[in-house]
Length: 237
Image 1 (tube, rainbow, N blue to C red):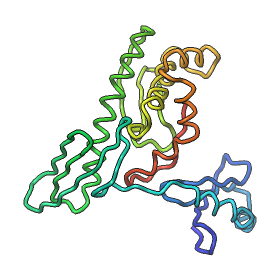
Image 2: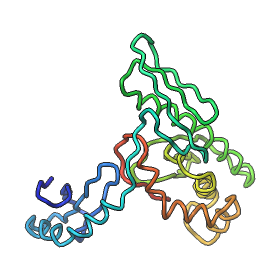
Image 3: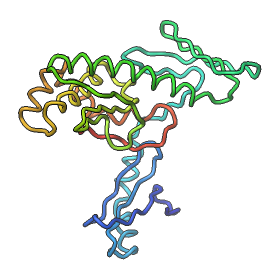
């Protein structure tokens, strides 16, 4: 990692890379500079230098991080939820209760962020499982499992053995965007490619294909601002 006046970046040698490339990690707020093995480091440093203005601009355009702290407002399944966190050293476990537009957290932890994340992951898994099941039934396809993870490269995935996996951060997306991702992965149960038939099925399974796809492509990176997990912006597959 370099420590000049440039934005922070890490150097990642790669056997497969054929050219120098910079990629921004929106959570860490650093850049990863991929360097082909035979490329001199001096050339890599020069490459970063020439992209200084682009790097600074990209950083300035990132959404402001929103940690899980008292008073934070989170968009959860299309509804703004306010965190009400109470620190109580005498309680043995962290309790989380959802009431209307409030999420009440009482914990002996000074930072119950991990517990809040666990609660939201469970909630995300429940809604994603229900939606996936509903859509799979319309095309007569069976789902083996539905999992949620803090994925580093994908919003969702569908394996050849009918296992679906999603980023739990989709819970912060508008309902039509989350629905589009589910439709995308369920469509892969029938077409493990991105053929015309796949896209036609994805469109038919989506509540609002155009708006959902547009939001994920243009605003998906905003989902990474919530909490403190260290991941890069996922893509759709």
